[in-house]
Image (cartoon, rainbow, N blue to C red; front, side, top):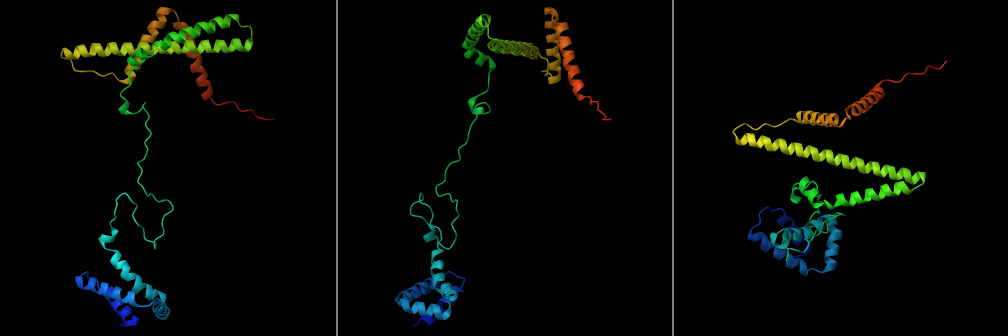
Amino acid sequence: MDTNDALNSRENSSEDETGSDEDKDDIAHLKEELSEIPFCDLEALKHKVGSKRYNKAIHGLFEKEGSSSKLQKRENRNRPREMSSKKQVPRLRQVIPVKKRMNRDPRFDELSGHFNQEKFDKAYSFLTDIKANEKKQLQKELQKTKQPERKQQLESLLKRMEQQEAAKKTAEAKRQTEKQRKKSELELVKQGKRPFYLKKSDKRKLELAEKFKKLKSSGKLDQYLKKKGKNVASKERKKMPQRRVVET
């Protein structure tokens, strides 16, 4: 059987769509015949029939055999799969699967538990004593220093510390008030009353009422109202349109 007959029979067999045993025997027989043909005859055949027709007949034989599931299996599943040389390999190819690293913020993650202010204050209660000692040292240094810049810096630090202490006391008072309200509400629920939940606006009104009561008892209500009025007037003044200057 010459090379032309082998090529024609290969093209006829490639047109069949069935994968029966007869086709497999024909492919094996054609492979044996092609292996016996000298390389110089194959090159002459390639120039004679054209490279396109030659590649379709010769390489198509091995592609059909390589498409079987037996050759697609890997000996070791941890090894990368063998890619075809006829397809362009992507530049960024993931050879070994790597788990994506997830960053976790403990402040917003449920795995870290829920924040409890009382437990936090109890665990870090030693910071209160440290801040108190620092405040005393700053006050002593303020009395001794004579440099205007350092004096201004110390006054600013002390003022900030006093504001932090006042804010902490206010937050603690709010928590205690809310805790007491929930406790009394729970007692009423145990007695048979339906549970009642305050809105944020109602909570704000109660907080303001409690704040005004404390300011009135301490005699600082008038001072607070004056300061509040100045802030409101300043905001309203910023909203007003500025007077235009007409050039003459």
